[in-house]
Each structure stands twice: as C-alpha cells, then as structure tokens.
Length: 159
Image (cartoon, rainbow, N blue to C red; front, side, top):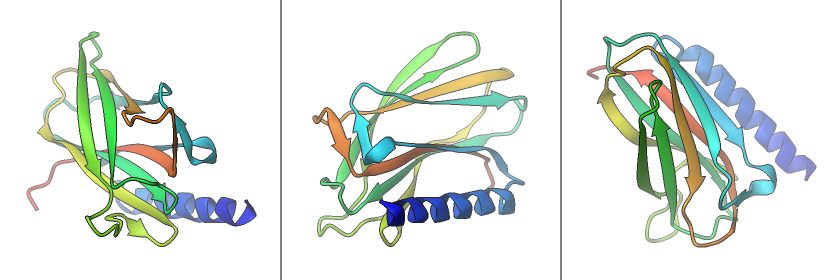
C-alpha cells in the first residue's frame, strides 16, 4: 500500500510539473483520483472548465491512468457535456488502452497514463462554466485497475 501511494505521489508531482511546463497553451488540466483503483459504475467524476476565450479553438483530451491489474483492453466511457446555458450532450467513447497482445498504449511502468482525443478544434460559443461528467460504461459494477480519470483542454495549434 505504501509503494502504491509513493508511486501515485510521484505521478501527481510529474503531472503538476508538466502542467507548469506547458501552461502556455493549457486552459485546463485536472485529474480525479479513484479510491482503491475501484471505479463504481454509477459514480461520475466531474470537471468544470471556466471559459473566457470564445475566439480561439481548443482540443479536449480525456486522460486515463490504469495499472497492470486492469483486466480489459478497452474502456467504455460515458461523457456528459453541459454548456453554461444548460444544453446537454451525451457521448459514448471507446478508449483502447492496450493492443491485441496486451501491451499498454499509455506511458509508464506500473501505472500507465494515456491522453485520448475527445474533441478537436472546437470553439466554445459563450463564456462561462462548461461541465464534463465522466463515468465508466463497462459491464462490471466495480471496475478495478483505473486509478485516475482526467480532462485536459489546450489551445489548438497547427503543429
């Protein structure tokens, strides 16, 4: 248990350092830790993005951290997106976390971190708070092996 805590602490520190190193284009970057790497089926993780820039376009990424104890190749996510004026959109996303041979796509050693494109080159039509609620859509009630879920919003660049 102590080793897992140290490993999670190291990843959080690295994520914080990368946040400050890349903060020029980042509008938002947050993770929610999943207690005991056991994600309850009906438990959403919420992210609130305050938008003031309605001119530039942005890329939105879902971020997943999984351990070797995750039993599947993919992860189905249900994303509920709400605009400041109350409009709601629901999306179902299939995230491929490993290849056909079981090799994880994410970066890491014991804990694998993967950024998954969700939306690209979007413009937020109005200033205000945009909400994202993410829950898993797998067939198990208590999904083991996912340690964190995150959301990252960056200003789009043509590189």
